Image 1 (cartoon, rainbow, N blue to C red):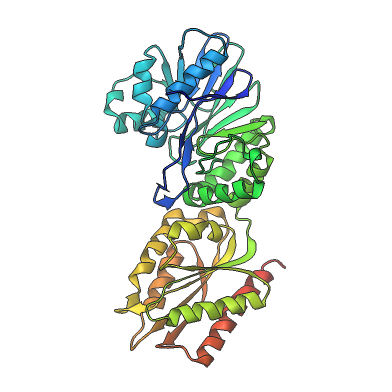
Image 2 (cartoon, rainbow, N blue to C red):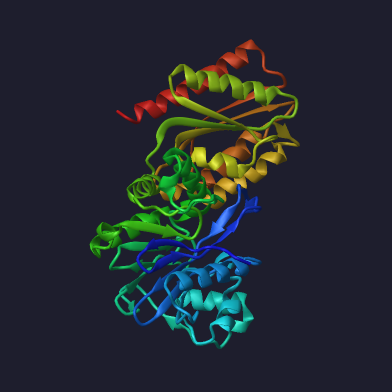
Length: 410
């Protein structure tokens, strides 16, 4: 096939693949994605940074050939393969690439070497160059410096910095799952790109928030952060101006939130639904932003990008056999898995439920949310269909929760 590379700096090309059809990643819905790879031409060596997902090597190799043609080189020869991360969306075609460019050497972290050998058995016994923070590779006029970045978002992750141009190849950090025809974030509305960056962060990076905060400090101490002029992640858009995404990541990692409450609920016979709507009215009465998610129609991956920037949530489900309605379970598991307490913001929570002759949902919901790092500060349980008095009480519960997050600003 034919496919064009895209020049992002002198001797540096995007040679990745666009996955127009992918609709799910790590269990959350996406509108397609890209697997960004970068070719760096030095005076002595050529490096390929990262690789592509299954079935995408035709795009990768076609773009590599195009980049060599644009550089006026007759022989397509890669000397260095840099793997910032071993997950299969970045490495599935690595062995194919090794076979195509048999003289190329692999550079990666120690954990990445271990994980490649565990995931792709052809790499067992394969000699790799293990690097860490402080190590660098001279391509001839172009220096690639390596920075360990464990848990952003796997233990093997690292960044690669092209020092002379200040380009940070950040792998999964600072990316988005988007399939767009243009390569720069600045080619599109900033709010649109940041929203998808937030979805990406909430579903993939939030667990590493504490690590990310320390990494920012480390990059500052090393003098690297101030040298970053462009961020080139492995998914989505390249940041010609890194300031907006760096600021957003710093805020998300440190738990900076809005005066906002996310209401999450499920229902059997509409009773819990009525309670949720009344709670939302109470929240709005305090001029606090409110977002509602009905878990019969929504999915857990959708809610978390609003939870990320909310100071509180309200979670409700009816009682079924003395336990919460089981459909809410995936939401609870998702929240627990992502671990928002790592952001440093101890989010408040209101738990509510409707029951028949016996309860039980509130106790279980409270325990699960507290285990996921939420501060359950209030709860409310109604019997069968809520009447006007119950709905008035739900209104007051929402109002009280909204007041409490505004008081935290004082």
